[in-house]
Length: 294
Image (cartoon, rainbow, N blue to C red; front, side, top):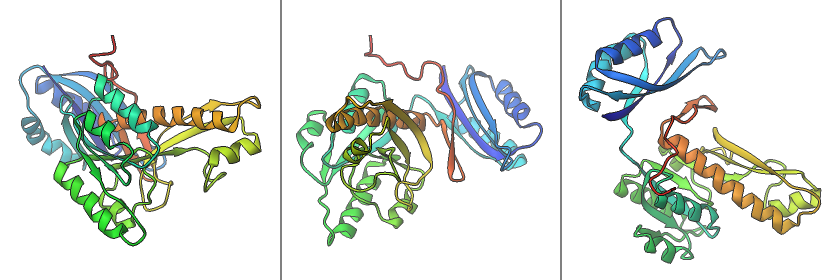
C-alpha cells in the first residue's frame, strides 16, 4: 500500500478535522499518524496526516477529489507520496563535519534523500564527494565574482531539480535575491552563541567567558542573516575542565546532529512556516528506520 502525507494550513474553524477524516475514509484511506496545532495568537490551524491508500488511490486522484474541501475551508494543502525522496543540494566550504555526517546518514538510509550534488567554493571535499558517486560543483567566490557565482549556483539548483538546499557550513552570505527566490527551501546551521559571540572564533570567545552551555541552531535562510525561522536546536554542557579545542569538537558534534534533524523534519513535511516561527510536528513511527542500521 502506498503511504501518503497530507499537509494543511488554514484559519481555524469548526469541522476541519471531521471533513479531512471523512474524506480519507470515503476514499479508502487509513490514517496511521496525525498531528495538529491551533495557533491561538493568529487563529491558524495546521495539521499533518500520514495515511495509507488501501484502494489504489493516487496523488492525482486524491488531489483532484480534495479540491472542494480545500476551497470550502480556504486551505493551503498538499498531498505527498512518502516513498518519493526529496532532491537535496548540499553547499559546503572548508568545515566538513556536517557534510561527512550527512553523507553517512544518506549512505545507510537514515536520511532518505536524493543528494543531487554538492557545491563548494573550495576543492577540499571534491574527492570525498566524487567517491560517493555524487556530482561535485566547484564554484569559487570572490568579492568581485559573487554575482556570477550565485548565478551559477542557481543554475545548478535548476538543472538538478533540487527541492532543498542545505548549507552544511557554507561560509558565504547569500544575496537577498537568492533568499527570496528560495524562501523556505534553504536550511542553514550555525552555533547558538548568536548574538553573544559574533565574528571569528566564537568557541574561543565562549571559552574565554567560561560559558557552561554550547549548542547549535538550524533555521531557514532569509535575507536577515542567521535570523530565519528556527527548525531545530540542541545544547551540550561544558565545564571549566574543557579547553577551547574541546568546545570546538563538541560544538561540531551538536551542529551535525541538529542539522540532520532539521533536514529530517523538512523532508518529511513536518515543518510548517508560521510567520517568523515554525511549527515542527513529531516524526511518524518508522520514519527514522533505515535498511542498514542493523
